[in-house]
Length: 77
Image 1: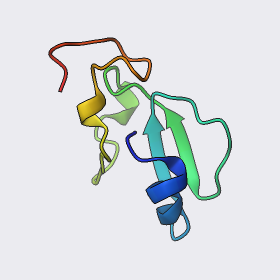
Image 2: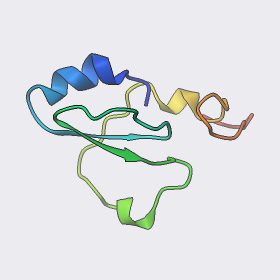
Image 3: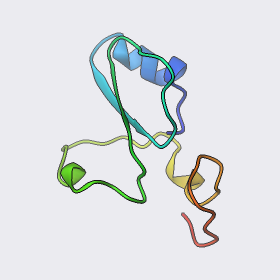
Image 4: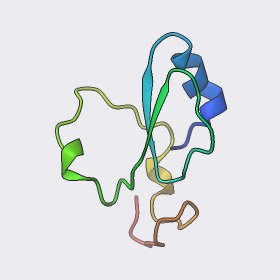
């Protein structure tokens, strides 16, 4: 996830519940935020057709860099 939890995500969570999917663990609970640790390169089948709207906040350009526990991939996004 490119957006920091204490930035945009926290602002949205002040108005409505928001789900956050990230490869990195979340170290503390935040009111209004439902967190799921997920690797977008290895999505569980349960997430296929999971929702009708999805926002990717500056995340895709980080795939393949190896900075967040993902493997380095020169052909990444």
